Length: 287
View 1 (cartoon, rainbow, N blue to C red):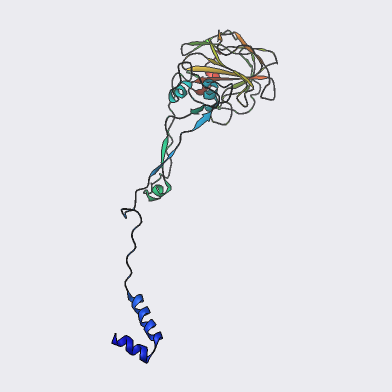
View 2: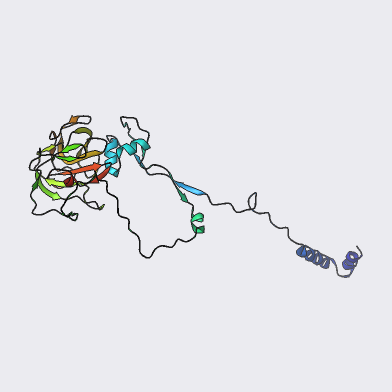
Protein backbone atom coordinates (compact mmCIF):
# COMPACT_ATOMS: atom_id res chain seq x y z
CA UNK A 1 0.00 0.00 0.00
CA UNK A 2 2.78 2.37 0.94
CA UNK A 3 4.74 1.50 -2.27
CA UNK A 4 1.66 2.08 -4.41
CA UNK A 5 0.99 5.51 -2.86
CA UNK A 6 4.67 6.42 -3.14
CA UNK A 7 4.93 5.28 -6.75
CA UNK A 8 1.73 7.10 -7.59
CA UNK A 9 2.98 10.33 -6.10
CA UNK A 10 6.59 9.96 -7.24
CA UNK A 11 6.31 8.37 -10.68
CA UNK A 12 2.65 8.42 -11.51
CA UNK A 13 0.30 5.73 -12.98
CA UNK A 14 2.65 4.41 -15.75
CA UNK A 15 5.02 2.82 -13.24
CA UNK A 16 2.17 1.03 -11.45
CA UNK A 17 0.92 -0.50 -14.69
CA UNK A 18 4.42 -1.74 -15.56
CA UNK A 19 4.79 -3.50 -12.22
CA UNK A 20 1.47 -5.31 -12.69
CA UNK A 21 2.46 -6.55 -16.22
CA UNK A 22 5.73 -7.96 -14.89
CA UNK A 23 3.90 -9.86 -12.17
CA UNK A 24 1.47 -11.43 -14.68
CA UNK A 25 4.28 -12.49 -17.05
CA UNK A 26 6.20 -14.30 -14.30
CA UNK A 27 3.21 -16.37 -13.12
CA UNK A 28 3.60 -20.10 -14.05
CA UNK A 29 1.23 -21.43 -16.74
CA UNK A 30 -1.24 -24.17 -15.86
CA UNK A 31 -0.46 -27.35 -17.85
CA UNK A 32 -2.97 -28.02 -20.63
CA UNK A 33 -5.29 -30.98 -20.27
CA UNK A 34 -4.39 -34.02 -22.43
CA UNK A 35 -6.59 -34.75 -25.42
CA UNK A 36 -9.06 -37.54 -24.85
CA UNK A 37 -10.48 -38.80 -21.62
CA UNK A 38 -7.56 -41.05 -20.68
CA UNK A 39 -4.66 -39.07 -22.07
CA UNK A 40 -3.25 -42.26 -23.63
CA UNK A 41 -2.63 -42.88 -27.34
CA UNK A 42 -5.30 -45.25 -28.59
CA UNK A 43 -4.51 -48.34 -30.65
CA UNK A 44 -5.08 -48.11 -34.40
CA UNK A 45 -8.30 -49.72 -35.49
CA UNK A 46 -8.61 -52.08 -38.47
CA UNK A 47 -10.59 -50.84 -41.42
CA UNK A 48 -12.81 -53.31 -43.21
CA UNK A 49 -12.65 -53.66 -46.98
CA UNK A 50 -15.89 -55.11 -48.29
CA UNK A 51 -15.76 -58.27 -50.36
CA UNK A 52 -16.30 -57.69 -54.10
CA UNK A 53 -19.91 -57.74 -55.23
CA UNK A 54 -21.78 -57.77 -58.53
CA UNK A 55 -25.19 -56.27 -59.37
CA UNK A 56 -27.30 -58.71 -61.35
CA UNK A 57 -28.58 -57.53 -64.74
CA UNK A 58 -31.88 -58.56 -66.30
CA UNK A 59 -31.64 -61.89 -68.13
CA UNK A 60 -28.55 -63.14 -66.30
CA UNK A 61 -28.36 -66.45 -64.46
CA UNK A 62 -26.01 -67.59 -61.72
CA UNK A 63 -24.20 -69.70 -64.32
CA UNK A 64 -23.53 -66.80 -66.70
CA UNK A 65 -22.20 -64.72 -63.79
CA UNK A 66 -20.00 -67.62 -62.67
CA UNK A 67 -18.65 -67.90 -66.23
CA UNK A 68 -17.93 -64.16 -66.34
CA UNK A 69 -15.85 -64.21 -63.15
CA UNK A 70 -14.35 -67.74 -63.41
CA UNK A 71 -16.25 -68.82 -60.31
CA UNK A 72 -17.85 -72.09 -59.26
CA UNK A 73 -21.62 -71.55 -59.38
CA UNK A 74 -22.10 -73.79 -56.32
CA UNK A 75 -19.70 -71.64 -54.31
CA UNK A 76 -21.52 -68.45 -55.38
CA UNK A 77 -24.83 -70.02 -54.34
CA UNK A 78 -23.41 -70.94 -50.93
CA UNK A 79 -21.90 -67.51 -50.32
CA UNK A 80 -25.20 -65.78 -51.16
CA UNK A 81 -27.50 -68.28 -49.41
CA UNK A 82 -29.44 -68.98 -52.61
CA UNK A 83 -32.21 -71.57 -52.79
CA UNK A 84 -31.76 -74.96 -54.44
CA UNK A 85 -32.91 -73.51 -57.78
CA UNK A 86 -30.20 -70.80 -57.62
CA UNK A 87 -32.84 -68.08 -58.07
CA UNK A 88 -31.48 -64.56 -58.53
CA UNK A 89 -33.15 -61.24 -59.41
CA UNK A 90 -32.29 -58.16 -61.44
CA UNK A 91 -30.47 -55.50 -59.34
CA UNK A 92 -29.62 -58.08 -56.67
CA UNK A 93 -26.17 -57.61 -55.12
CA UNK A 94 -24.23 -60.87 -55.25
CA UNK A 95 -21.12 -61.42 -53.18
CA UNK A 96 -18.25 -62.84 -55.23
CA UNK A 97 -16.00 -63.75 -52.32
CA UNK A 98 -16.40 -65.62 -49.06
CA UNK A 99 -15.91 -62.90 -46.44
CA UNK A 100 -15.00 -59.32 -45.73
CA UNK A 101 -11.26 -58.80 -45.56
CA UNK A 102 -9.77 -56.83 -42.69
CA UNK A 103 -6.95 -54.55 -43.80
CA UNK A 104 -4.82 -52.51 -41.38
CA UNK A 105 -5.32 -48.76 -41.30
CA UNK A 106 -2.47 -46.58 -42.63
CA UNK A 107 -1.21 -45.78 -39.12
CA UNK A 108 -0.99 -49.49 -38.30
CA UNK A 109 0.87 -50.23 -41.50
CA UNK A 110 3.46 -47.56 -40.68
CA UNK A 111 4.05 -49.07 -37.23
CA UNK A 112 4.65 -52.62 -38.41
CA UNK A 113 8.16 -54.03 -38.52
CA UNK A 114 9.83 -54.28 -41.92
CA UNK A 115 9.72 -57.70 -43.55
CA UNK A 116 12.85 -59.11 -45.16
CA UNK A 117 12.14 -60.14 -48.74
CA UNK A 118 14.26 -62.98 -50.17
CA UNK A 119 16.58 -61.82 -52.94
CA UNK A 120 15.25 -64.60 -55.16
CA UNK A 121 11.46 -65.07 -54.96
CA UNK A 122 10.16 -68.58 -54.47
CA UNK A 123 7.69 -69.70 -57.12
CA UNK A 124 5.15 -72.27 -56.02
CA UNK A 125 4.06 -74.76 -58.64
CA UNK A 126 0.25 -75.03 -58.88
CA UNK A 127 -1.28 -78.34 -57.92
CA UNK A 128 -3.29 -79.89 -60.74
CA UNK A 129 -6.50 -81.75 -60.11
CA UNK A 130 -6.22 -85.12 -61.89
CA UNK A 131 -9.75 -84.67 -63.21
CA UNK A 132 -8.93 -81.38 -64.87
CA UNK A 133 -6.68 -82.75 -67.56
CA UNK A 134 -6.53 -86.11 -69.33
CA UNK A 135 -3.11 -87.79 -69.10
CA UNK A 136 -1.05 -87.55 -72.28
CA UNK A 137 2.22 -89.20 -73.29
CA UNK A 138 3.12 -86.40 -75.70
CA UNK A 139 4.84 -83.18 -74.68
CA UNK A 140 2.23 -80.43 -74.19
CA UNK A 141 2.33 -77.63 -76.72
CA UNK A 142 2.98 -74.08 -75.66
CA UNK A 143 -0.30 -72.09 -75.58
CA UNK A 144 -0.74 -69.83 -78.57
CA UNK A 145 -2.77 -66.66 -78.87
CA UNK A 146 -2.56 -66.50 -82.65
CA UNK A 147 -4.45 -68.32 -85.34
CA UNK A 148 -3.29 -71.92 -85.66
CA UNK A 149 -2.01 -72.47 -89.20
CA UNK A 150 -1.98 -75.64 -91.30
CA UNK A 151 -3.96 -77.67 -88.80
CA UNK A 152 -6.39 -80.40 -89.79
CA UNK A 153 -10.07 -80.08 -89.08
CA UNK A 154 -11.18 -81.04 -85.59
CA UNK A 155 -14.34 -82.84 -84.64
CA UNK A 156 -14.56 -84.67 -87.96
CA UNK A 157 -16.49 -87.37 -86.12
CA UNK A 158 -18.64 -85.47 -83.63
CA UNK A 159 -20.32 -88.65 -82.42
CA UNK A 160 -17.02 -90.18 -81.30
CA UNK A 161 -16.76 -90.01 -77.54
CA UNK A 162 -14.15 -89.86 -74.84
CA UNK A 163 -14.40 -90.11 -71.10
CA UNK A 164 -14.02 -87.02 -68.91
CA UNK A 165 -14.93 -87.78 -65.34
CA UNK A 166 -18.26 -89.66 -65.44
CA UNK A 167 -19.33 -87.94 -68.69
CA UNK A 168 -19.12 -89.00 -72.32
CA UNK A 169 -17.96 -86.18 -74.61
CA UNK A 170 -18.19 -85.31 -78.28
CA UNK A 171 -17.18 -82.39 -80.53
CA UNK A 172 -19.71 -79.55 -80.85
CA UNK A 173 -18.81 -78.74 -84.50
CA UNK A 174 -16.48 -79.84 -87.30
CA UNK A 175 -13.99 -77.29 -88.66
CA UNK A 176 -10.49 -75.86 -88.65
CA UNK A 177 -8.99 -75.01 -85.28
CA UNK A 178 -8.48 -71.24 -85.32
CA UNK A 179 -7.32 -70.58 -81.79
CA UNK A 180 -5.95 -72.79 -79.05
CA UNK A 181 -6.62 -72.68 -75.33
CA UNK A 182 -4.45 -70.43 -73.15
CA UNK A 183 -4.27 -70.54 -69.36
CA UNK A 184 -2.21 -67.36 -69.11
CA UNK A 185 -4.98 -64.87 -68.40
CA UNK A 186 -4.47 -63.12 -71.74
CA UNK A 187 -5.75 -65.16 -74.60
CA UNK A 188 -8.57 -67.62 -74.95
CA UNK A 189 -10.32 -69.45 -72.14
CA UNK A 190 -11.47 -71.99 -74.73
CA UNK A 191 -10.90 -72.86 -78.37
CA UNK A 192 -12.18 -71.28 -81.60
CA UNK A 193 -13.36 -73.54 -84.44
CA UNK A 194 -14.12 -72.23 -87.93
CA UNK A 195 -17.42 -72.92 -89.64
CA UNK A 196 -20.13 -71.51 -91.89
CA UNK A 197 -23.11 -69.50 -90.78
CA UNK A 198 -25.99 -71.86 -90.06
CA UNK A 199 -23.84 -74.92 -89.28
CA UNK A 200 -25.26 -77.06 -86.48
CA UNK A 201 -23.77 -76.57 -83.02
CA UNK A 202 -24.21 -79.73 -80.96
CA UNK A 203 -24.19 -80.44 -77.25
CA UNK A 204 -20.79 -81.85 -76.31
CA UNK A 205 -22.32 -84.00 -73.54
CA UNK A 206 -25.67 -84.70 -71.89
CA UNK A 207 -26.85 -81.76 -69.85
CA UNK A 208 -29.37 -79.00 -69.22
CA UNK A 209 -29.41 -75.46 -70.66
CA UNK A 210 -28.75 -73.03 -67.80
CA UNK A 211 -28.28 -69.89 -69.91
CA UNK A 212 -29.37 -68.83 -73.39
CA UNK A 213 -28.89 -65.18 -74.32
CA UNK A 214 -26.44 -62.46 -75.28
CA UNK A 215 -25.79 -60.65 -72.02
CA UNK A 216 -22.05 -61.40 -71.76
CA UNK A 217 -19.90 -58.90 -73.63
CA UNK A 218 -17.66 -60.57 -76.21
CA UNK A 219 -19.62 -63.83 -76.37
CA UNK A 220 -22.46 -62.83 -78.68
CA UNK A 221 -25.40 -65.24 -78.59
CA UNK A 222 -24.35 -67.73 -75.96
CA UNK A 223 -25.57 -71.07 -74.62
CA UNK A 224 -24.29 -72.59 -71.37
CA UNK A 225 -24.92 -76.24 -70.48
CA UNK A 226 -24.61 -77.77 -67.04
CA UNK A 227 -23.54 -81.41 -67.25
CA UNK A 228 -23.12 -82.30 -63.58
CA UNK A 229 -21.95 -80.63 -60.37
CA UNK A 230 -18.43 -80.19 -61.77
CA UNK A 231 -18.64 -79.51 -65.52
CA UNK A 232 -20.31 -76.81 -67.60
CA UNK A 233 -19.73 -75.92 -71.28
CA UNK A 234 -20.20 -72.66 -73.18
CA UNK A 235 -20.98 -72.17 -76.89
CA UNK A 236 -20.50 -68.59 -78.12
CA UNK A 237 -21.01 -66.39 -81.24
CA UNK A 238 -24.07 -68.32 -82.44
CA UNK A 239 -26.31 -66.92 -85.15
CA UNK A 240 -29.44 -68.50 -83.67
CA UNK A 241 -30.17 -70.25 -80.38
CA UNK A 242 -32.30 -73.39 -80.67
CA UNK A 243 -32.33 -74.81 -77.14
CA UNK A 244 -33.91 -72.76 -74.37
CA UNK A 245 -33.17 -72.35 -70.67
CA UNK A 246 -34.26 -75.35 -68.61
CA UNK A 247 -34.25 -77.72 -71.59
CA UNK A 248 -32.51 -81.08 -71.19
CA UNK A 249 -30.30 -82.07 -74.13
CA UNK A 250 -28.37 -85.15 -75.20
CA UNK A 251 -24.85 -85.57 -76.57
CA UNK A 252 -24.86 -84.54 -80.24
CA UNK A 253 -28.23 -82.78 -80.10
CA UNK A 254 -28.51 -79.51 -82.06
CA UNK A 255 -28.63 -76.57 -79.65
CA UNK A 256 -27.72 -73.61 -81.89
CA UNK A 257 -26.62 -72.45 -85.33
CA UNK A 258 -23.07 -71.22 -85.82
CA UNK A 259 -22.58 -67.51 -86.57
CA UNK A 260 -20.50 -64.42 -85.89
CA UNK A 261 -22.39 -62.48 -83.19
CA UNK A 262 -19.95 -60.63 -80.94
CA UNK A 263 -16.95 -61.37 -83.16
CA UNK A 264 -15.45 -60.72 -86.61
CA UNK A 265 -16.07 -63.99 -88.46
CA UNK A 266 -18.18 -67.14 -88.48
CA UNK A 267 -16.86 -69.48 -85.79
CA UNK A 268 -17.70 -71.27 -82.57
CA UNK A 269 -15.95 -70.29 -79.37
CA UNK A 270 -16.16 -73.32 -77.08
CA UNK A 271 -15.26 -73.56 -73.38
CA UNK A 272 -15.26 -76.32 -70.78
CA UNK A 273 -15.26 -75.29 -67.12
CA UNK A 274 -14.35 -77.64 -64.28
CA UNK A 275 -15.49 -76.35 -60.87
CA UNK A 276 -15.67 -72.87 -62.37
CA UNK A 277 -12.19 -72.85 -63.88
CA UNK A 278 -11.56 -73.03 -67.64
CA UNK A 279 -9.67 -76.09 -68.88
CA UNK A 280 -8.38 -77.06 -72.32
CA UNK A 281 -11.20 -78.79 -74.27
CA UNK A 282 -8.62 -80.62 -76.40
CA UNK A 283 -7.68 -82.73 -73.34
CA UNK A 284 -11.30 -83.76 -72.79
CA UNK A 285 -12.77 -84.17 -76.28
CA UNK A 286 -12.04 -87.33 -78.33
CA UNK A 287 -8.97 -87.40 -80.54
